[in-house]
Length: 203
Image (cartoon, rainbow, N blue to C red):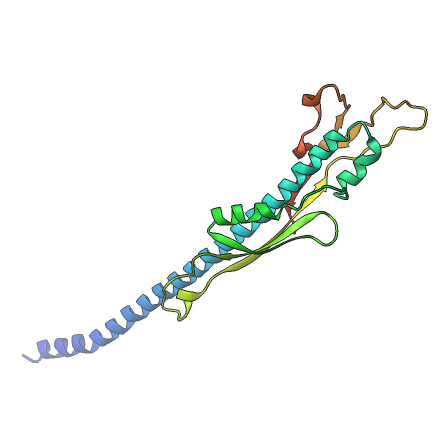
């Protein structure tokens, strides 16, 4: 008649341990959730910064390519255009907020890189905080990130020697060993912005 009482005592002692274990597991689950929320917000901020910087750099790349087409008959101007050292080039930070907004953030700072290669550094902050979690303060915590995108020329050339004639244009030697024999009378056959310049995030 004493056996049921012993079983009941054992069960009673195990129940608080069970509750403690379950509570611990729930706490860990909520902690992992909070970490995941923070990581997702940080990743979103970095995506917005990357996109904003690339957008600004691509706009400048397109401007430079257009300038090169206009100056295609004057090869002496090509190198300055490829180096981004050309008057009339408008700064392209206006593009950065557009892409940041599309990725749930806003631009806090945008500036052209002070030294070559030409590019843009953009800093952003997320529009929404991490959100409520078991970690205090996350409901008011925003993620910040920055990125730099650069523009690099893909082509080289050699200026014509004296006596070669003004109608002889240099051949462009570009990425992947592609050669361009230029014919200004065939604009469709000229290299495009993506052929002349590479835009990528800085390492």
